[in-house]
Image (cartoon, rainbow, N blue to C red; front, top):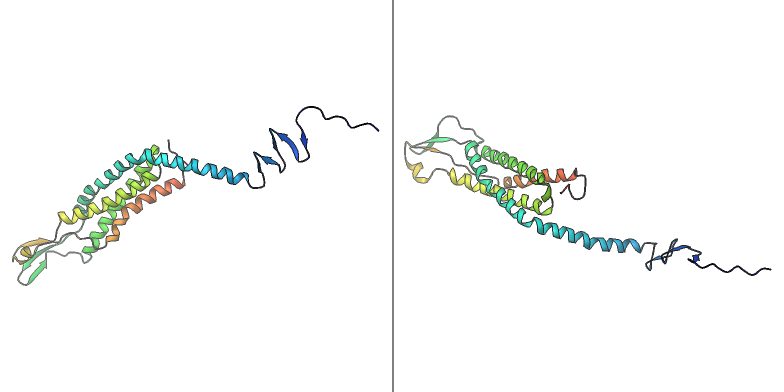
Length: 220
């Protein structure tokens, strides 16, 4: 009976599988952690801080530009308010003894018409703002999304206050002046209409993001 041959010098062979760099395959450990499910949590735990660090750096780099963008959008409320004054339906009345009578045939939905016109103006502003925000590729992200929503919301409030300020209703003195002609003022009867601009802006941005090819939204 011959004696067993000596094992040649070189990498040892384990029953579980060959050793590669000290890490055994087939159920053995890689860096002291088995394949059965211990590696994945470590990889995810290591990737999460790295991803958060990337988001944080992105927010910091976009913060100043996002603030400027929100300010520019808020200022868009000025032309939006002027457009509301120009397009909104208004009626003229002649002051007589005991009250005022309409001149012509004003619409019965006059107040509703004022709200509808402002909603359409703010919807157009929101759609335009969302499209422009998405078009700035190197700034796509959370900061500009929040800035777009905030800026359009402020623009809606500014347009509302400017329109009512430029087109006030008749005063008590004017209504007491018999023979004078007065014009109805602008008044927003439904405050939720101010949410139309940010809603439309976010809708455009989110829909565009859904069709983005990469996780970075095509930023570059």
